[in-house]
Length: 525
Image (cartoon, rainbow, N blue to C red; front, side, top):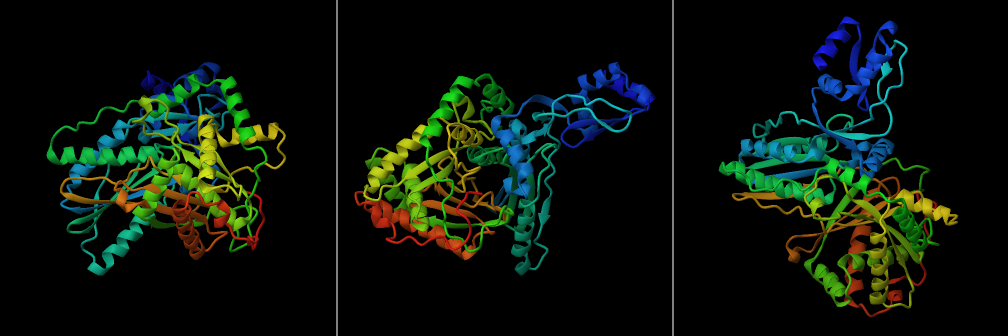
């Protein structure tokens, strides 16, 4: 049918092209554009785009709420590559590149979210004979047949030994910083480097629209399982995913309930009533009207002793390690700013039901957590109160924009557009993987950018004795790297001190005369 339609279009001198955003464009004589022909173009748009792009569509659905927000964030960001998830997997030992290629091919084929593109729905704006747009509107996701995997080995062993590591680092960071076009299949960006006879580096770069922290853990574990099976020449033992990204979006639409949303919005508005719109943390430079997106990430470790103290504190008070870490961060920011009511944005996995446990997609959303200090209160009491509030917020999860709208509707006068301080407590992110015969190291290789002002992160290591991996993503418009390193180490130190004496008052951790902000405005950006 499509072949016959293409033959007729050719005879009528109608030329088709795939335009940005998954639109179908045509250039044709005015007389050829009958209503019947335009209807045929609409009806067969997907098949025609598949022919034009060489990507056959195998499933299609509206985007999920999270995907829609990510598309908006991608296009709004000064540097869209800030949404990259760049992971370097280093192997030491006798790596089999063919087995790795086979494993990655199977990995991509297993998960629809790793071979999807994002397009407009099938609409037609009409035509006048010049080049016209045959589709525009809100976004949809289209799953396409993944193309053959191209993973050549880039061998650096021919370079002098002193040049190999610097060249590998340069190539890896170049790969990490490349942008994605969401209207084309958003495949993982892959690059395999041989750095020495027995040392290899695989760059595995995702766009955040395809995966969250939970998904990354799944993918890394599957790479290990698939590679091990391929290297041994045996079938893998992985079960098929319980759901795909399109299934999740359809489930979300089917379960949308305006009454539930309104109830959740009212709860969140009440929970956040009176929270300050900004926290005046001192900066190295005046805050600009708009952040440029420039930034960086500093990293560290919190010892096994600190982790043990956090977990013992939480267990003794029947709360969670997250509640302890969030409360301590609130106290830390209060000490810097003099503000006693701190609002944190916390990424939340938001996985509902066992069907979504094996889903590779972006399901995470932000939860607002309030740390409201009473200096005379004990640290344990503050943790209990903060943890209770966080649990309530998670039970009433909504997109941040919807919460802010609810606050305005409830009469709040000073509502931030976004929350400048984030705590990423990544207890669902496990990057420690094991492959027989190889030593494997996994490293985040984030480009020198920042999504906001300050994002503090804690990720528990699989080996409890190693404690937490810590990080701070910061805006270079506001802080120098040295300051960011001090902020991260100071927070880690306060977390340890906070847990050491749970029955002491919070006031012991606060300066008697808080230092006012040296520069900038207090408003959230």
